[in-house]
Amino acid sequence: MKRTVTGWLLAAMVATCSAAGQESKRQVKVLTVCEVLGGVRRFAGTTVAVVGRMERSVSIEDHYEFLSQDRCKHPVITHGHVWPDKIQIWTTWEEGMPKPPSDRPKLKVPVVARKLSAVHATTDLGTHQEPRFKVEGHSIVYTHTAAVPNQWGIVYGRIVTLANLNEDCGTGGCGGDDVPLGIIAEPYNVRMLSVDGTLLEEKR
View 1 (cartoon, rainbow, N blue to C red):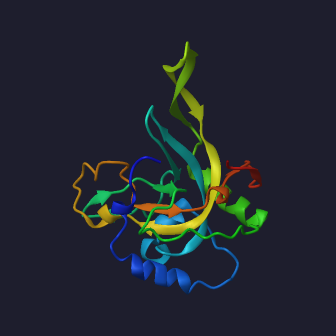
View 2 (cartoon, rainbow, N blue to C red):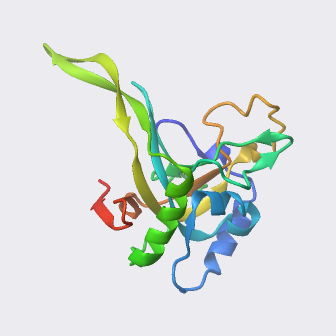
């Protein structure tokens, strides 16, 4: 991920890290994207597993990933701006960011399946656009952009609020990726789901 994310995080990361250190070893809480967005203050700084539609924003230069869900009943609203129902996924740690959890929890399939069913009730998978390339001589050149199906996914990580969440962005949004929250995770804790809630092959 090329874009620097440290500047996006709230200055109050000390409080976030402190809260993270107080987490107990209870069963991992599994939530939908809408549930997390509906409880920003409650879940910021906590370690949870989030179920949603795995979206990618891919260009020739950049690649970003999000968990999303459609038609959340309680979207994040600040200064009259309604934020998209998305959580950005970060798997690259930078100095100043909270640490992602390093354990690999064994998630209960029936619990994950129930959450995925709730997401599926309001959300279609749809597609996203990705550039395609070919080898031409000694170079790799762009050829076209293709529609690629989205997937269901689950991410186990730490929820963080973004710095611009407190800004008055107006109705046009805050620019950039225009998302209210991020989830910091180890790459191996970003997983794809089948429609019945079982884990697919581990993300590489």
